[in-house]
Amino acid sequence: MPTPSTEITLSTSRTLGLVAMAAGENYKQANQVLEAAGFSRQTGGAYAVSLANAQAARRTAGALAAHATEHGVALVTSTRPYLGDIGTEIAARLPGTWTAQLELYSYPLWQDDLWYQLWEAGEIHRALQDHRIPLASVLKDGKGTELLLIERPDHPAGYLIGALTDDEKEDVLDDPTTPKTMVLPAEPDRAATTITSSFLPALRHALHHRDLNTVLFALDRIRKEHDTLQTIKATGRYTDGVPLSSRLIGSMERAFADHAWIAFRTVLEHGPQLLAQCRPATTAWPDDAAALTRLRAALSDNATARQEETILSSHLHAIPRLLRSHEYHHVRAEYGMSALPAIQTWLADSAVFERQVRAAQPAGTHTLSAATPPTVNPRPALPPASPAPASRR
Image 1 (cartoon, helix red, strand yellow):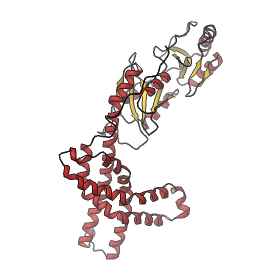
Image 2 (cartoon, rainbow, N blue to C red):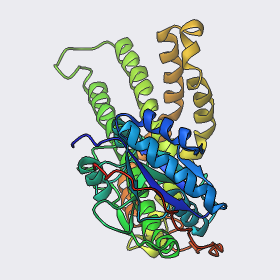
Image 3 (cartoon, rainbow, N blue to C red):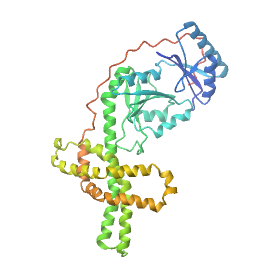
Image 4 (cartoon, one colour):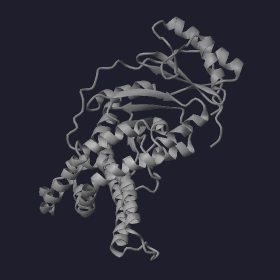
């Protein structure tokens, strides 16, 4: 992607007035130009000046044009409304309590940070590859859901919405659970309706199946080691045929319990919510209800142990001073040994769990209702200014 020139993009805001955002290799110098012209820095990194006094606004715009010309900074007048306003207006129309936070990626490489957060393989993914993305609005519901809103590149209007996540994820191009970008209309009320009726249900569906696959992967790891251990115990020999003493087999059982507990923590974390979505009576396998009851009971029996181990894990930085490595493995093995009945239950009923969760409808998909749209004032017009240098974009 070619390196963009340093430029200042001007837009108008219903609340801030004339808004300016610097981008490019020399964005710091562009910010100094804005400050010299009389703009004030806002939360998130944008600069603004009030339009309440038209004469003062014209003077500020003229000063900006002069300083920009002097320092070789291009001025660009955006035809779009200020994205900070758009994000806030959309957030206000979403169900629940949402907030919007503007993020500027003034330095070209900063947008690369989004690769580690973005969980989507559609148009936003391609936009990051092919375009300069100088700003975005991050929408948050306060419960862990974060959405990335950007202006749609190569289009005069409209926006793109994608999902962000802090969780470890597979390659978004290969992961079948990866949610896809949705194109939003330019009007905030229609954009919010699209998010509410289409994107959020699709995101919940993606999260539902990602969590399911995470649990199944953990169970598969446990099953492989469990089957190997059972074969060794049945034959009294290791996989290469070497005879093993009963004492060594006991040590292997404890090692298995240690490793199994690490994987089973994933089941304890995601299993309850996934089971809560299951409605076996509405599926082709109503008799699965008994197995689901066993799975819930197995999780309940180990919930306290999981809480205790979580507290211990949160202090891992202090463990070298408190416990030797083998002692911590011993502690984990104790948890694993006590959880073996639950682990065996989950291994036995994993097929039932998978088919019921895949048949389940993630909670909330059909219960969203749009909030009442707030009243907003018209977007002010840009003030006239001295001719600015042409954009070098």
